[in-house]
Amino acid sequence: MDKAETAAFHAALTDRSFKFNDWVARIDLSKAEAFDESDKANILAAVKSDSHSGGIHGLNKRVIELLRQWLSEQVQFLTTIPSNDDDFNVLFSKGRFLRSQGRAGEAEAVFRQLVHEAENQQWPEIRLLAAMGELAGALKDQRKLQEAESVYRECVTGLERTVGATHPHTLEGTHNLAFVLRLRGKLSESESLYRKALAGKQSTLGVDHPSTLITMNQLGVVLLQREKFEESETLFRKALTLQQKLSGEGHPNTLCTLNNLASLLDATGRLDEAEGLRRKVLRIMEEKLGPLNPETLASVNNLAALVEKQGKLEEAEHLYRRAITGTRQVLGPAHPNTMRSVGNLAVLLEKQGKLAESEALYCSVIAAADGKPEEAVHPVTWFYMRRYANHLRSVGRIDEAVTVCTRALGAQERTLGSDHPATKMSVKVMGWIQEAAQINTDDTATTSAASSVEQ
Image 1 (tube, rainbow, N blue to C red):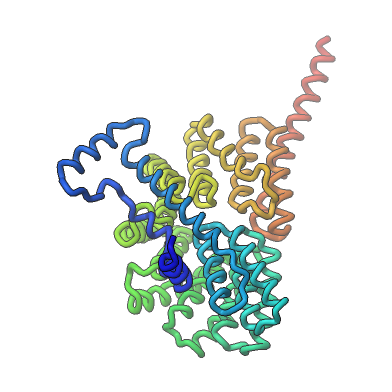
Image 2 (cartoon, one colour):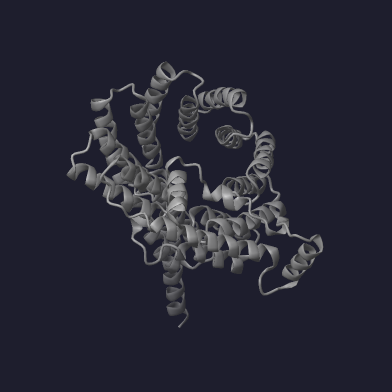
């Protein structure tokens, strides 16, 4: 890029006007224009008939891969040591951009550099706290939850000291800390902090401010997890009414609340109403964001899970496969969203008795953890590793089940903690496996004794 293009690229990063995932979601080479319509028809016919390229879908995928590679190269050039406000803002925005692309490890390195420079150059504390807050966010994205919690706590304490407990930055920091605590299974403290953040935002920002409604929505999520269904539903419906009025039905925040309300309806057995909301959300996302937007694909996965629960297994399988194809193309095969859909399809195929493909899918999810430090592995991997261990138990492969479940349980205890609900479930599954192992041992002993008597 020349000097002017570089300046424009920096500006786009700084004001966060560029969103790669939304951009690639709109790429469809079948809609490309040509000077002559007959040329377009001939080119498209040739592409569609080329089995080696994968047709239009394969060409779209290749273009997206090249764009992602080019952007990665451009972002890597932003290596300035921040010595003034402009440099700080560019690197700060680089880190946020990397987070938005799911490259949280690289974002972590950028924010660690900013924190280091802020401390060394004795910049104003508010700048240090801003970099620390983003560092905590990058750690959260990688599910390095213990360190993320520690950094967020330090941020909130610093913000309370420098700008006050009711400042919007402090309240947002409190919200973020509550979010990490929820992920760590510390639901009681998370609920308390969400209530504190919500009360502060309502009094300082207003009851209908978008940030207030996001916190209201997230408090509803914690209450849903704690099975406080009535209050959770009240909060979801209140937030939804205000978001629809202020931002419209197609706004991402509105759709998030609709999704959460659907989850509550699902949890409370109102599956038909939940299905209606899931289909509504998917329809809006397809229209507003495009069929390959990551949020659209997550909505496909959510609908699949619901119709599977309703016994509509053929439709569920079709939707899971659609989600997998899309997330592999847009996010990559190792992204947590991709692995979640792959794992869900593995579970569905296991239920249908399609064990060979199911096992292959389980193993592909588990392979994503191989060679990585445990803290860098998304918890969804350990979840499906535990599901696979239980499958191995059910088909009598007890020794393999013990090995797989031991790995998952150990990783969850070290990264999530012993009190996390996912860890507790793995302890329960390990108990089932050990019971099966004991039964096998008893059966073997009985058979040996019978053989001795017969002899």
